Amino acid sequence: MRTTAILAVVLLVGMGAMANMVITASEPYPDPGTMVAFQLEGAPEGATFRWTLGEHGTSERSERWLRWVVPEGYHVVEVEALRDGSVLARARYGLLVDWQLGATRTVTQERNHLEVRITVRVKKTVTGGLSLIERTPEGWAAGTPVTDGDLSTRGEDGRLYTSWWSRLEEGTQTYCSYALYPDASGRRAELSGEVVAYINGERVERPVGGELTSQ
Image (cartoon, rainbow, N blue to C red; front, top):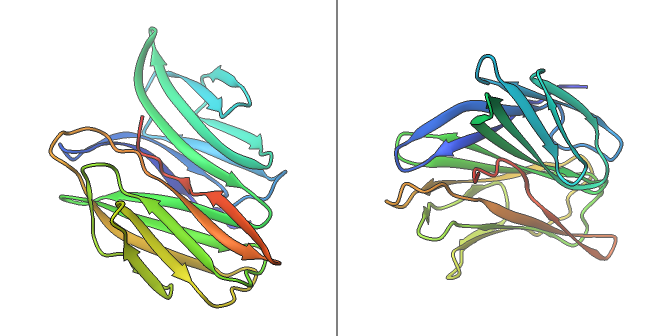
């Protein structure tokens, strides 16, 4: 299996600083029952790590890695680096575990903005179109999306809408990316969105996983 590293980073926006600790996932689009390996990079030396696997338990360990046979659903993996009772760093990663769709978000810190890219993997043939809805944090500004889809617009509600109208076969991978400009408050931002597809005549809606940014 090809290993794809997806980074879940803690971003300090406004000042443009980025915490060093990130989570990588060996498989960002897993099916239920897949063994996914999570790895910490840039973690503080001498720390222990508290791993929280959504609603599936918490464990504290010295290792910078964890393997999990993931159940179906959407799970937020959270890690705190601890030393002498103090939290030195945090990281979060959203994982969508689904038979029909996979969706993940990556964020790259540029000089004066964040570059956001959402990738959707079609696991069951989409026969009636696919849409991606991404929320812009309040007070932030989003640039014009770049996509391989048929239409991408910014709504008055601050959301970005991207649509693919044609049939998408199983195994298709498609994307939308955009620049995100922070407000002047220096606060951290939380990103969220969902993907909607029509598969075998049924509406399927799933949250976008990957980078979440908010801590």
